[in-house]
Image (cartoon, rainbow, N blue to C red; front, side):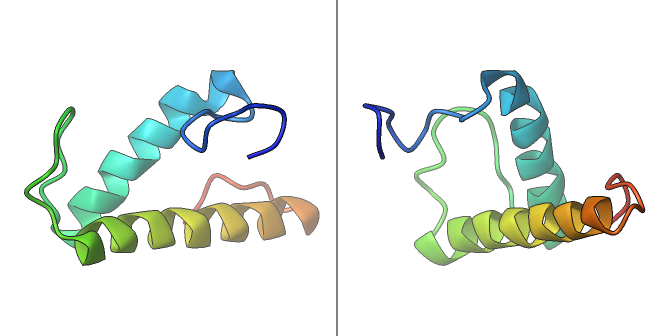
Length: 74
Protein backbone atom coordinates (compact mmCIF):
# COMPACT_ATOMS: atom_id res chain seq x y z
CA UNK A 1 0.00 0.00 0.00
CA UNK A 2 1.09 3.58 -0.36
CA UNK A 3 2.12 6.00 2.36
CA UNK A 4 3.60 3.22 4.47
CA UNK A 5 0.22 1.67 5.32
CA UNK A 6 -0.15 -2.08 5.58
CA UNK A 7 -3.12 -3.73 3.89
CA UNK A 8 -4.67 -4.44 7.30
CA UNK A 9 -4.95 -0.77 8.26
CA UNK A 10 -8.28 0.88 7.58
CA UNK A 11 -8.04 4.04 5.51
CA UNK A 12 -10.54 5.53 7.94
CA UNK A 13 -9.62 4.08 11.37
CA UNK A 14 -13.05 4.95 12.75
CA UNK A 15 -14.55 2.45 10.29
CA UNK A 16 -12.65 -0.56 11.75
CA UNK A 17 -15.47 -1.62 14.11
CA UNK A 18 -18.08 -1.38 11.35
CA UNK A 19 -15.91 -3.43 8.98
CA UNK A 20 -15.35 -6.07 11.66
CA UNK A 21 -19.08 -6.26 12.37
CA UNK A 22 -19.79 -6.62 8.66
CA UNK A 23 -17.20 -9.38 8.37
CA UNK A 24 -18.75 -11.46 11.15
CA UNK A 25 -22.30 -10.80 9.92
CA UNK A 26 -21.44 -11.97 6.41
CA UNK A 27 -19.59 -15.01 7.71
CA UNK A 28 -22.72 -16.00 9.69
CA UNK A 29 -24.91 -15.49 6.61
CA UNK A 30 -22.58 -17.76 4.62
CA UNK A 31 -22.45 -20.37 7.37
CA UNK A 32 -18.73 -19.88 7.96
CA UNK A 33 -17.52 -20.24 11.54
CA UNK A 34 -15.40 -17.08 11.74
CA UNK A 35 -14.23 -16.24 15.22
CA UNK A 36 -12.11 -13.50 16.73
CA UNK A 37 -8.42 -14.30 16.78
CA UNK A 38 -6.86 -17.20 14.89
CA UNK A 39 -8.93 -18.63 12.05
CA UNK A 40 -6.21 -20.88 10.68
CA UNK A 41 -8.74 -23.71 10.40
CA UNK A 42 -10.59 -21.90 7.60
CA UNK A 43 -9.72 -22.49 3.98
CA UNK A 44 -8.56 -19.73 1.66
CA UNK A 45 -11.82 -20.21 -0.24
CA UNK A 46 -13.92 -19.60 2.89
CA UNK A 47 -11.93 -16.49 3.76
CA UNK A 48 -12.21 -15.31 0.16
CA UNK A 49 -15.98 -15.70 0.20
CA UNK A 50 -16.24 -13.46 3.25
CA UNK A 51 -13.97 -10.80 1.75
CA UNK A 52 -15.69 -10.98 -1.62
CA UNK A 53 -19.14 -10.55 -0.15
CA UNK A 54 -17.88 -7.64 1.98
CA UNK A 55 -16.69 -5.87 -1.17
CA UNK A 56 -19.94 -6.67 -2.99
CA UNK A 57 -21.99 -5.25 -0.10
CA UNK A 58 -19.85 -2.10 0.15
CA UNK A 59 -20.18 -1.48 -3.59
CA UNK A 60 -23.95 -1.91 -3.34
CA UNK A 61 -24.09 0.57 -0.45
CA UNK A 62 -21.96 3.10 -2.33
CA UNK A 63 -24.16 2.78 -5.42
CA UNK A 64 -27.26 3.33 -3.29
CA UNK A 65 -25.71 6.42 -1.69
CA UNK A 66 -24.76 7.82 -5.10
CA UNK A 67 -28.32 7.24 -6.26
CA UNK A 68 -29.60 9.12 -3.20
CA UNK A 69 -31.18 6.07 -1.58
CA UNK A 70 -29.01 5.76 1.52
CA UNK A 71 -26.81 2.76 2.06
CA UNK A 72 -27.96 0.88 5.09
CA UNK A 73 -29.99 -1.84 3.38
CA UNK A 74 -28.67 -5.05 1.82
